[in-house]
Image (cartoon, rainbow, N blue to C red; front, side, top):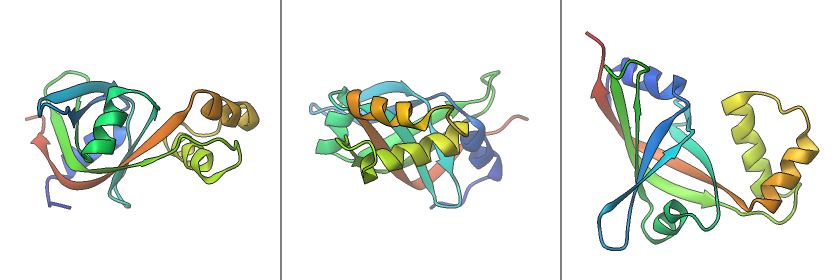
Length: 143
């Protein structure tokens, strides 16, 4: 991962809303609002989405992705570039694909009040976990 200011990494870690850019088949960017979870120690960003979305189709064809987040006042921003892998959708509520989504939820939001219900919904919604390995982070900080 490229060395950059810890301020950009901190902004990525605390942001729960961002814009994920993937590459459409015609080469133009496709942008999606997402709720990312950044694990700096592992150097990955995780996003839960559903099968059939444009971002999933784009990433299955070309795994390059970029995530941008901003501070609440819009004066600071951080961009992470990397390569995504997709896990799921799962068909078994206790299978590895759904477990990856449980791990994502725990890291992003803590404990769920009903894990059995959560697991069932992950299967019925055909949820997919995007895991982006971060190669580069850049941005600006408040001055």
